[in-house]
Image 1 (cartoon, rainbow, N blue to C red):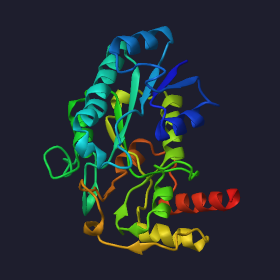
Image 2 (cartoon, rainbow, N blue to C red):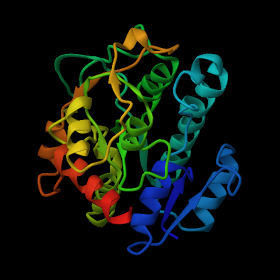
Image 3 (cartoon, helix red, strand yellow):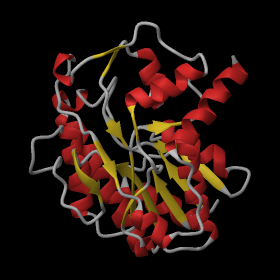
Image 4 (tube, rainbow, N blue to C red):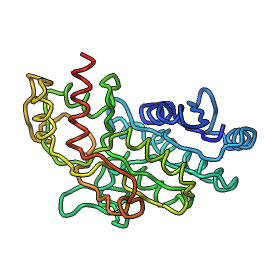
Length: 284
């Protein structure tokens, strides 16, 4: 085994399923490998000749980030302390680390946010506690690369965290323009980095979202064009929703991504939505 994925959830499992036919890869939840224990993780990496660790574990909250407001200690532990321990272990062993994080540390539409921009929805701003933990890890980590994703999408609607599944489920919709990440493209990029033998520590922070961000209404219109709709949809203001924590709404720049990795192809958001819609119709 040369690749270890930590976190057998939505993102981790998508990456695992993509890599499995191509690489020697194993995935573990904490029940299978107590990676919260540095000595356990260290021994596993050494004994199994792990070259790359992909950390997809962390606290996202259920059903959404609001739960982080009432579980701050756990949220901090899983999003800051544990991944920092993983980072230190990988650094000590000179193992590549890819940490999957979030771009929900920015909000607003004054610009497309680049990696060097100080977060305006992070530790020192009005934000969700979840976003504060994501910012904290970025500030404290000194090893590996951080891939910032947003509003993940896959072809299957079977997972509750799929952005498309969410907007089809919710009756009340807020119409904001947001970057999104097609997880098969993320998995292909991870495979690309491994194939090119790129040391992840040379990358640092990297926004990984698909180009040409769409408004929610544009996504719904695209789905409606294929007969995929929720007849109860209605557009409301964010203040009308029963939420506890503030929400991030923004567009991330992919200039660094397309400059550093110009030979890696990304699908546009519109193409992704069309692809998902066609997949839903095929499997219905």
